[in-house]
Image 1: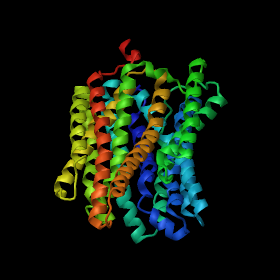
Image 2 (image 1 turned 90 degrees about the vertical axis):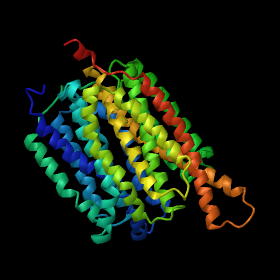
Image 3 (image 1 turned 180 degrees about the horizontal axis):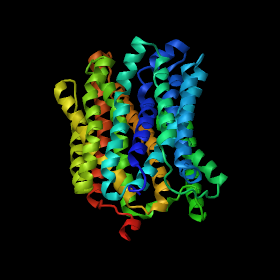
Image 4 (image 1 turned 180 degrees about the vertical axis):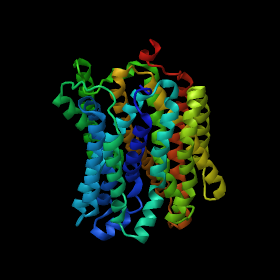
Amino acid sequence: MESTIKTKPILITFMIGAFFAILNETLLNIALTEFMRVFGVDEPTVQWLATGFMLVMGVLMPISALFIQWFTTRQMFIGVMSVFLLGTTIAACALNFPMLLTGRMIQAVGTGLLIPIIFNTILLLYRPEVRGKIMGTFGLVIMFAPAIGPTLSGVIVDFLGWRWLFITVIPFALFSIVFAIKYLTNVGEITRPKVDILSIILSTIGIGGIVYAFSSAGEQPEGFLSVTFLSVLSVSLLSMILFVLRQLKLDEPLLDVRVFKYKNYTLGVGLFVIVIMAMFASEIVMPMYLQGPLGYSAKIAGILLLPGALLNGIMSPVMGNLFDKFGPRKLMIPGTIVLVGVMLFFSNINPSVPIWSFIIVYILLMLSISAIMMPSQTNALNELPKRLYPHGTAIANTLQPVAGALGVSVFVSIMTQGRDSYLDKQSGEITEHVADTAMTYGVHHAYWFALVLTVISFGIALFVRKGMSPDYEEE
């Protein structure tokens, strides 16, 4: 297909659109305090700008496979970027918090449908032996955009005001639409499978409920034992079980779960989920620790984390090339070993640790993630026949917000419970030193759990083999 279609304009179109769509996942994080001040809302309310974004993305990912088979590449890309532009414009003009949240949710619709379209198109355009390089190049955008989001957000809010977080994105979104109209060509075939409404309802309740349950667990005093969490999670899991059973019976499933019959796909997705959990959790827990016991300001904490985040993005194309040359195992096995070592370090961290050693270890964390995440996802998708590409990409991308919500919620809850249990045992006055020690104790607990997960990831990496689609094996 590479010989008959000009792939470079397509890739450039996708990279422009994806950069600004993905940038919005973290662009608002630093500005949440400003939104609380401007609109007079509290922490649990303003947090929905982040949680709601992830919730909408999680709900839409499973449906993306259906859209990909119903509409052309041009129609899908131009459509979702137009929706993203609409949401950005509404948010920029927001007169109150509900209007801002509405714009943010519409943005999430565009972002949630965009990523599966891009991954599916890359799978159709490029043969397995060069996909690592292409995925790595695209991974540069996926990693770099959220990495600079918080830093860029702080600068924009300080010098221009919060509305410019959205205004600055509008011309680039417009440019990507115009560029797509001129250069983007259609890839793949439209099959228009039957739309099963019950499957859509079950997946929406299931995925949306899981993301909501874990995202809101931290707001409940009882955490994972709260009635709200347990009831929502129970209904969500029941919906997912019914969804899976229904997909196995349908001739044209909304999301073909038979992709898990392919061993490398299952192993790759499992590894991907663990790494996402570790990454999302570390990006939440470590800034808390830097601003707590280590005593750094939010701005300095962001700067200390920035080298690792930027290097993660820069190394993505390099890891993609190495994946094409050496296969998955020579990246994943060393990557998981380094990841285990990093979690061991964090599980013993304390305020006396030199900051330079923390920076180096955080860089190692991000390097190990770049060696595992994109190669594991690419290798997993390489294993599938072409007819399952939309379903494989939809499932993998659905699991990203689910794993992110799960990782953040579990890690923060373990850390909080560990800290509180330490404080409960103290009989005297809770001094700053005692509070810092309690926080350190909680962080240790969180990373002991992370250490177990990363050891499991190492075990998974040992069983991964180079994925090759049956369609290409037959050629």
